[in-house]
Image 1 (cartoon, rainbow, N blue to C red):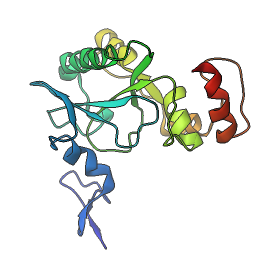
Image 2 (image 1 turned 180 degrees about the horizontal axis):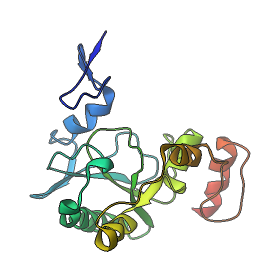
Image 3 (image 1 turned 90 degrees about the horizontal axis):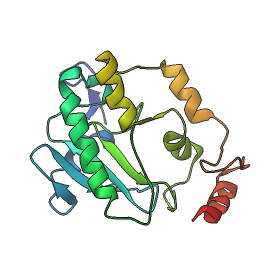
Length: 193
């Protein structure tokens, strides 16, 4: 099994024996069986490993690999993706939702997470999973749009700051509780359901 560089010189993204797992999102958004909602600019699918009761991904049809690739010219698209996320979340009036992006995404293709804040899922297993949605590693869609409107660019923290977010101690996102571990957190989260 080997790797080669893609057209931008990135290593480990294209495997000689098939696509790297980080490229699976690009395939998923073209699978009619996985599409929940689609318009001229976006495709919405359910996350294949949802970290909450409801977890959707809003993806642009324009190929934008990651958040780093977003420019001022994409502002209208970001706003549209946000509106689509709100539309999806309104289908579940009994839940509150978070709309945002991972600072360092695991999948290639820009995607907006639309996730219910119950975090009730068997796929939510690790501290990294939890902290990727409940710390500054998760960049809210509204905040990102505001940054582009005010500054014309996204404010970016250093890689080490984002890594520190992922390594933070566990903390409940709804109260002051500090769980000892993930099983403790998941038990605690039931009181907020």
